[in-house]
Image 1 (spheres, rainbow, N blue to C red):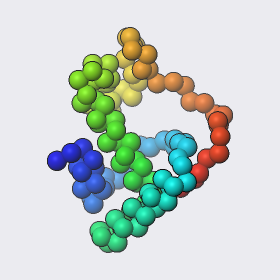
Image 2: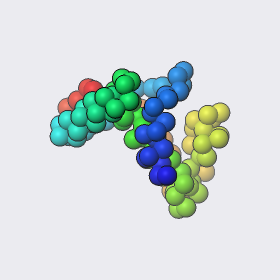
Image 3: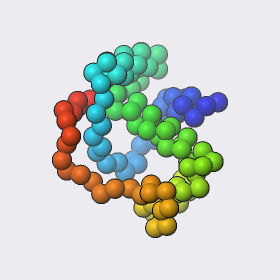
Image 4: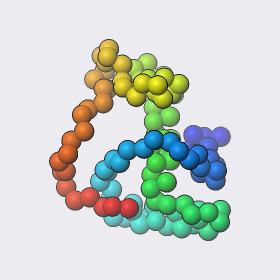
Length: 113
């Protein structure tokens, strides 16, 4: 089973109570429409309310999991077990992959889901 398939199946039984932070992403209007359509279809199939935000969160999780399991990237990234205790990236960051400070400015229009 792929990471993405696993995320889709886990969406059927979401885990509650995880700490979350807001994150702004620019997405084309056509992709937003596709996300809306997927959320509607998944809600219809499961009988549960599946939101666009849930799907985007699942997509980000799947992407991060894929990066962490990549042999080249994984050398520089914090393993998932340590991430819960310490959300900071390693101080030794030869690849320049450390998290940047939050930027309160915006570089363009934002679509709120």
